[in-house]
Structure formats: C-alpha cells, structure tokens
Image 1 (cartoon, one colour):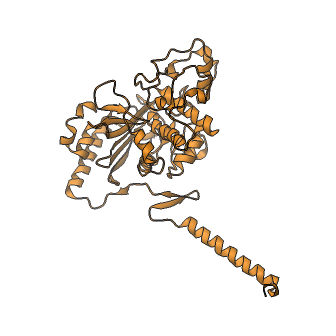
Image 2 (cartoon, helix red, strand yellow):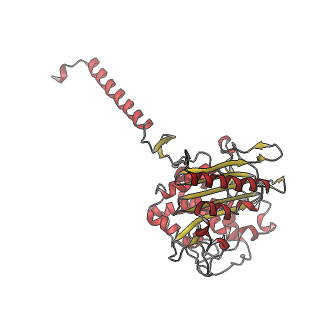
Image 3 (cartoon, rainbow, N blue to C red):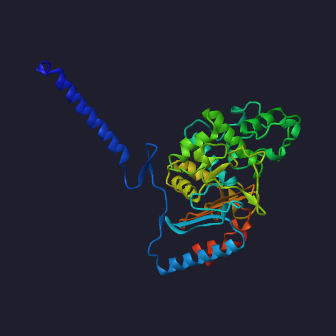
Length: 403
C-alpha cells in the first residue's frame, strides 16, 4: 500500500518532519530553565548576583557603613572597582577613578583589570580539571611533560601548593641567556631553565617548605599547554570562561578587538606603566577581568560547575604548617583556617605593575568581596573595616591581627 503513495507526497511528508525537528531543536537551544542562559550556543547557569531590594534596617546600615568606608578609600587614593555580595545579593558595587589617568576615562562595571596573582586560582582550577579528567596526576613530575627540566623531584601538587622550592624565573636569567628575546612566553622560560649553565640554585628541596613563587604557576600553565596541545588562553576560554559565561575575561596575550575593549592600564605614582619584559609569561598572572566575572568564577566553582566536590575540597585543603598561625595555602587559594583546619576565609590577592587585586570570601556568611585597582594603593588590601561590617566586630576580634 505504501508503494502507491506518490513521490511528491513522500517529499512533502519528509519536509514536514524536518521542519518539525529543526523547530524543536531551535526551541530547545533558545529556551532554558530560569537558572540558565545560552552563550555561544551553550546553556550555562546564571551566576550573577542580584540587586538588593527593600533591605531591612540592619542591612541598610551595613550598606551605609560600606559606602562610608569606600568614600574614605577614594579620598586616600583608591582608583578601581569594587563588588561586595552576600547571600547572592549585591551589598555594594561602585567604580572610582579612571581606566587611564591621562585620558580621564571613567571606570565602569565593565572595566577590565589585570588580575596579577589573582590569576593563580584560575590556573589551579585549569590544572585540577586535567587531573579530574585523568590526563594529569597530582603525583606527576615535571619531567613527564618536560624531560629536560633540570629540577627533579618536583610534583604537580608541589607546584599547586608552592612547595616545589623552584627559583623565581623573574630573577633567574641574565641578558646572556635571553639572547635579546623580548617578551618571552612560558615555553621560553622552560627552555631557558633546561639550557642555562649553571642551573639557577633552587630555594629549597622539593616538598620541604612553603615558598610562594611565581615559577610554580608559570610551569603549571606550560604543562597545561603541553597536555592539551593548545595555548593556555584558549584552554581557559573553552574550559572555564565560556562555560561560566565570563565574557569579559581574557589573557594578556589575546590581542583581538574583543579582548582589548574596556581594558585598563596600570599606574604608579600617577604615571602609566608600560609593558613589562615578563608580561607574556602567564599562569602566575596575565588575566584581565571584571568584578562581575570574578564573582561568576567563584560562584560557578562553588556550585560544582568546574570541579567535583572531592577536588574542590583538595583545593581548599591547607598544606603548609611550618609556621604557627591561621594563614595557609591550598591549591591556588590562600586561607585563614579554623582549629579543625577547614577554611574560615578563602582569598587571593595580586600585585603587578600598578595593579592591586583582591578576592576575599567567607563561606559561612556567604560573603564575597572583590576589589580591583589599577593605581597602586595599599588600601586595596585593607579589608578590616569591611569585614567588621559584614561579619560583626566580635567575630573578627580573634583574627584581626592576622589580616
């Protein structure tokens, strides 16, 4: 009986089915749950904080006090952006000063700042994603990826926790080693370490002690490139930035038109600082981002969108106990720890060529403080008053001296 159906009728039927399937696919692609949205064809979770509406008297007082703190910071020379969120609601958000002081172009919420060492948490998460996928082990030595690297016994977990004892690349090489090369990248640094004679002396034996050193995260970024076969910026973009909808975050080595929009310049003593010799070495620094995108990163991380709980717990596990006190370091995150060695505060700051940055989180109070500055000013790191407002003075008394 089917054979009696005219060919024209068959084509009409097939066409109708195709139209239905395409339409259904488009609906599926453009519709998402209330907690999701589509970015570049991918459905991602909405991770932005929401405005604070109709605050109660206690919250309104809290906001007023924060406003007063930042008025004083502005008078003391703070030039930058700030975002403070608690329980997913914006307590305070503002911009102070200029993206480029000479041009007098005012900062706004979309202004992008060089994160300096606040880039390290992103590098740590990038590496831990490779561990999660089974492509890298925390016990892997550097020689698995770079056989000629001259320092042996250094494992991936030591790089993540700054326990490698490696010397700082910024001070390791003189002009005769550089051979006139301007703006080396991470693979250049790895090559220089492999070839330079004599080999720069390490700071300590691997695993013996904590020693914060940018070389650790330079090497981690190089390993990411070696394992993935892609440059570090592209890997960050595909695995972290785009999945979280971080559309305002780019690596310094990205010179596309999109990456250059809203990019600020670093200043010190009122003068713009030009590009540094080591600016293109990334992983330890190098990301440009906004306060909003940094919040997205932390929120997405805590919601399990990047790492499973087991690895996230490893990132927030303290690993340095050489010195008594509450300060400690995990995998890419600094911490103030409680008596049971769980984190009371999670944070990371940064400084690089005029930029000052800080991400400070209190998981118990669900509070996130993000301060980004592009004119060197120590007030960026002075959070005592803000913490007292958010958490209450009694809660801060026992740790105030450690901040």
